[in-house]
Image (spheres, rainbow, N blue to C red):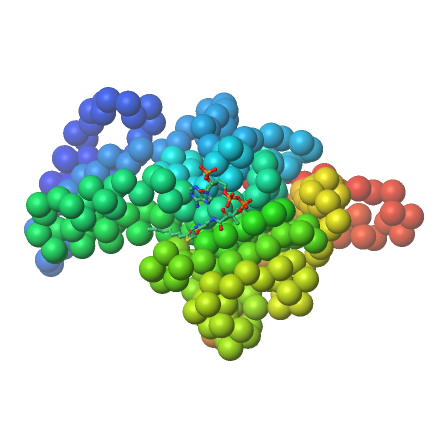
Length: 330
Ligand SMILES: CCC/C=C/C=C/C(=O)SCCNC(=O)CCNC(=O)[C@H](O)C(C)(C)COP(=O)(O)OP(=O)(O)OC[C@H]1O[C@@H](n2cnc3c(N)ncnc32)[C@H](O)[C@@H]1OP(=O)(O)O
């Protein structure tokens, strides 16, 4: 029960400019019965009924089938090099899609000759400006830290998105491209695709996810170190042999068709089951078996009560296979 002081403060309401829907949060420190600190924060919340427009300058978004959204890197004349807008928009796209009930699966592909040439080497002015500024070392350092965290968050948004993300890669997938696709759930590529953990060639350690996620995908520490220390290209066949991609295709078109077929198959399943599966695969990757099982048990307290289980059970009981379950969006 909040104290009188807190209840009083909670009645203080106001309209913040640009916030259409908000929620008052309060944190209250207690010392015995007495509140010793109270603060109120207005947290903006996306209107769940707002129409999703998905309009971006560096991304092209389509809805090719029910429940499926395709997002394409769309700077083909720049080899889809990731400029500052790209990093921001990737994060915004995946955060938005996470809350879009009509989206159950995402296909991430790219337009033009290459999937991506990695970070846009011609859009690193912020680094030059910062390094040349009069700020002292600690302040430069803190600004750099924030930038790296912002860029990390762009790809972490892919992993945090509860909808499965299928990466369909063609041509070069360089530097930041490996970081990005390592955060995806399923990776396909064309037979002419190639990859490089290129960061050492521009004098830096890969810092936005490759060193954290790629080793857990390929499970070969010696090879990971070789690729990350040398920046050498590795081609589609090797990417498949080490388990970085699961399927190869002779063209971008056949790859996108296969990605679409798999996406539609996933989109027809219970979204509660599919999204729960992604959440738990990610959680279990980063925790012990016992912690993963504990997490799962708590989750299932609620999710085993899902309508989807009854619908799926009735469909499986129909031996003629004529009952196709329709699962509500979440
Ligand atoms: C806080 C930071 C977090 C993020 C870190 C991320 C780090 C990285 O991504 S490291 C990797 C950076 N990328 C590279 O080093 C890629 C270098 N490029 C290449 O290896 C080749 O260009 C590529 C294999 C991608 C394509 O080869 P292709 O023969 O098809 O094309 P090119 O003739 O080489 O290039 C065509 C024009 O594109 C320009 N270009 C290529 N890469 C980039 C890039 N990353 N950023 C900006 N521009 C790029 C290249 O200079 C050519 O330009 P022009 O001469 O004007 O035609």
